[in-house]
Each structure stands twice: as C-alpha cells, then as structure tokens.
Amino acid sequence: MMSTLIHKNLSIANCSTCGSSLKFRNGKSQEHNEIDLQCINCNSIYSFKNGYLNLLPSKIREEICTKGILARKIKDGLHLSKLSKNEQDLVKGILASKSMAKQYFRNVVHPTQAAWSARAYERFEDIFIVNYLNSLLKNKEVAFIDAGSGPGRFLILLGSKMSVNSCRELKKNSETDVLYRYDDMYDKNLRYVIGIDYSEEMISHSIRLMKKYGLEQYLYERIFPITGIAQNFHLNHKGLDRIHKVIVCTFQTLGNQENMDLQVQLLESMKRLALPHGTIIISVFNKKRFKDFGLRTFYGREVKQTVGEIINSKQDEENSIVRTKKGVYSKWFSKDDLEQIFRKARISNYKIMDEKSLQPVTGYEQYLKPSEQRKDVFPRAIVGLAEVKS
Image 1: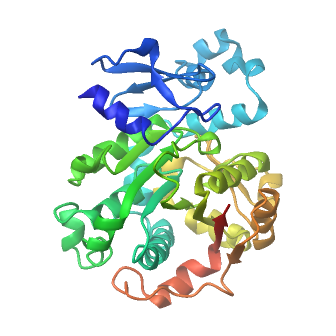
Image 2: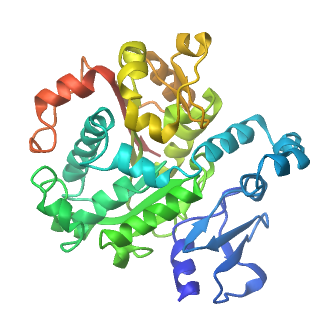
C-alpha cells in the first residue's frame, strides 16, 4: 500500500534540486512508515513519511527539525553559514508556521467560521478562481496547483466539486451550498489538484481535514498535498503537458516571502509549472489600506491569536510590512510593486487588477454579495492574472 501511494506521488512531482525523476533509495520500495527517495540525477534525498511526500531539501529539513533554543545555539545558530540568504529566509518562514495549522484553519481559512476580515477576502478569491475554472473546464482538462496551500483550503473546495458525498455540512449550509456543490464538469475534467506548502504541519493538517470532509478516496488519486518549496517545485511533466495548468498563489502568500528575490523566484516557478500552456493567478493585499485597515482591523483578535502580536518598527510600517512575535512576515503591495515582480519574472501576457478594474463575480450572492465585494474586498485587493504559453 505504501509503495503504491509513493508511486502515485512520483507520477506528479520530481526532484526539487534539479527537476529529474525520483526513485526508491537503493532501488527498494519497503512497507515502512518512512521511505527515502533519491534523485536519479543529482542523488538528492527526500522522504515519504506520515502519508505525504516531503520535497524539502535535506539541509533545510535538518534545520527545522532541530529541537529547542539551546540545541540551536549548540548547532551554531541554525548553521546559518551553510545556508544562503534565501534559504535562511525560507527557514524563518517555515519556523513561523509551527503549531499554527489547526488555529489557522479555524480563525483565518474556515469558510464560515473565520474572522470576516479574512473570510470576505478569501471568499472573493474562491469565487474568482471557481468562476475562471468554470469557463476553462467546459472544453479543457485542467491540473490545479496551489502554491502555498496551507491547511488545504482549495484542496477541500475543489474536491467537494468532484465528489457528491463530500463536505456535507458545507453542501447543506445556505451560505456555502452553491460554491461547494458537486459539478460533473469538475468530476470529468479537473484531473489533478496539487497543494504545495513548505510547512509539514500545514500539509499534515490538510490531509486530516480531507479525511474529515470525506475526500480520502481522492488522496493520491487526484488530490496531492506535498511538502515543498514552491520556488523549486518541479512537476513530472510526463502525461501533464497536454493538460492546461492553473497555478494560484493567493491570500498574500507572495507577500509572506521575505525578500523580493524569493517573490520573483516564486513567479518564475509558477511560470515554469504552467508551461507549455497555463494560467497564473496571484492575489495580494493593497498597501493603500495597510495603516488604516491592515494594522487596525485585519490583524484583529482572531488573526492575532493565530499569527501573533505585531512587533513592527517605524521602518516596517513605512514599507508596508508586518512582523509578528511568531515570526510571520507580510509585505503589502501597490499595483506597481506587483507589476515589477511580474516583469522581473519575465511574464509578459498579464493584467493587474485593483479596485478600479476588479468586477464583482455574480452567481454566489449567498456566499459573497457584489456589494460586499466592492466594500470589503476591492479596496484592499490586487489580483494578477497571466496566460502562459511556450
């Protein structure tokens, strides 16, 4: 059973270092709780453990597994001399997400229980993306990839549309029933849903939630939660090149990358994943609302309980950056900022939308009214969409 699950994962993902195929280490597939995998080209080692594929590079895995402050001091402060600046920043982000997944799903992501400051924004992202997929799935097979999947928000949403009997409480809820309704178009043409997150805890929790919501039958058949870094995630393109890829990075995940180099690398990776034909969708927070809304309202009680108290400096506030005691980093953007990142990533066929150009998505009024979109979302949303072709 274990080796079958791994083979299915390896049909989706390749080595994070060089993009080559992976194999069982020493050529053996053993029925153990943890199995090592090896790249056929560069010999990088990865693992399949606790029911999911872990594609974090070994030197990053070593750092995030170090226990306690004293142990970190003994081990020379995260071995920083062995890591590049980008790798150091990625480790900071991974450590910041520790012990957060369950609370993050409840307070920030849950479609009916999360704080409204987060929920309204996410509801718009949900219907914007589903509306886009609706038109695409009429005549194309699609693979959906969520770069920064967290506790599995889109894995659950899109899984519910492929399965009649899943997410029953959401299908019965008057607010969520239309969005989470089964759709034979999704069942037929949405071939794969892949979630990538660098937090093992987030991926592990997303698997638990999928089982809770009745989606276990789709795990590693059509839905693949994978621990990995989106900047160096590589698809196994065998059998996927004819499928249109939709790559999304939503709810400020781009702004959680702690420097512009990582932000550009993320878009470059999304572009590579989309080839030979696909779509990139990015959603970030508008820095025009950073001081009057972001610091005062968005980071309210529920969000602060999850990500920690804000510890901003004056310089951070001038640069529209949030830092919290738990180590969470969030950079808010202008429209020009996002355009600059698209240009640096050499993405040409794109459009950037803000409150002046975003249009309400209709058909989901119980979930999010057009008036709520205009009032509660558009003033603080910037959405980028790009069509990618080789």
